[in-house]
Image (cartoon, rainbow, N blue to C red; front, side, top):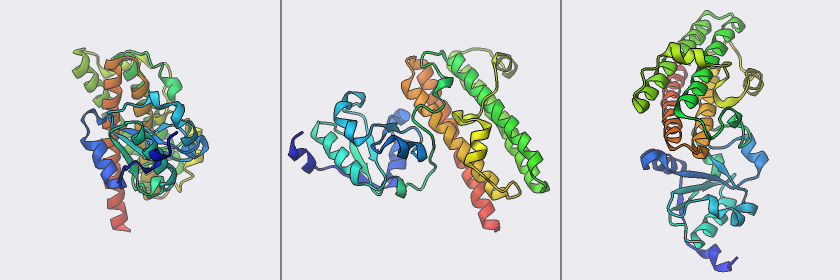
Length: 280
């Protein structure tokens, strides 16, 4: 490695600028590159982030596109700056260092190792097979919310869990609508329901794992909404990672569209949380 690489100028952006870059890039074709260690990534990472520890980066450059926007982050910005300078010195043209790292990221994060939940996708499935998986995850999350109603004695929280469960029906309808638009198929919700082998949970974690992660007060509407937001962030993370590794271009496009739907779910839940905080 040439020492001059470490003096190659690189651009730094804050979390707001990074979020705007993701939103405004066609096809959201931005690589979020995590250069921390696997345990750090599993504890918390940006949804859809690709993990390449700094020590392995020089051996895995072929996994990155030289013309693709790459936002690099670590814990607080030190390792990511070194990584950004390394890539810039190797002629990567659109490299950005995330100022302050994940500690400064004021948006949703995901948890779990890089392969978490990917057992649900083969990387070779058709759009129809992908939507069956997604549909099953929405069904599973609805059943989860309905089961949570029994854990609270507060009527307003029971109503909230019911509303969250009903929203999942809307998500199911949207998945089927996306599939129809992409394929021209006349498939219905009932058709997809028959294809589900077993309902899962959004984001690829089990019910038990979610309950362990989010040990919430079931009588607190704010904490319930916070858990729902975290689950949607897990779903966003899973669809992004599954889409990135899909070998079928139509399936990749479909999975990334589902990821966009998850972003809208996150925005809606964030608005609900803001309303709750205004009331407290």
